[in-house]
Image 1 (cartoon, rainbow, N blue to C red):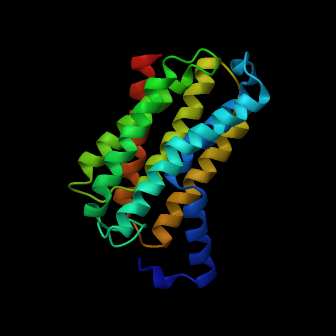
Image 2: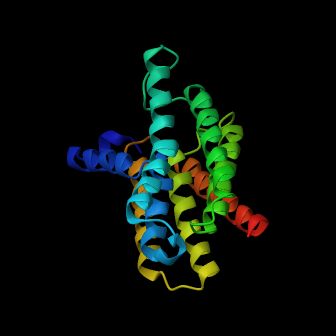
Length: 213
């Protein structure tokens, strides 16, 4: 369906939602969820250190990859920062993959944060690996990969800690549905690319969980 079918306010809302729920922000959102749901897992560090830890997650998983995309655009390696073509997404995939692997490597040595971060960071690393491979054939939805990974990680964390996180799961599911719908409204992806992104991220998180945990 063409994006011109929808009203301007709906299109604007879809675009704003795409920025708020951008896949680069998913690691930061998940870390913030852990801070609220399992504060006892951060025993041994001060509140200020915890805020710095959250900022470092944002810095390494969102700011640096986004800045790399900006540099690629300014150096004329891509037509824009929105990465609309599969070719433009190759280098950003590789850059993001490096930072996700680095976060997983660091998480193995931390004893003052939730252990579930180990499988989560490995999961998003695997997601980018499969995303890069599939990108050669389909323009798989990065937003769907991020949304599916967040929902799966929250559910798996709830199983691991045997905790009732119904509200968080419902919010994540609704957010996932909204962002996937938004990508269809703006005509950036078709349903197959959306479903493929969800499946890849969910399988990656589950695979990482059963392998690491």
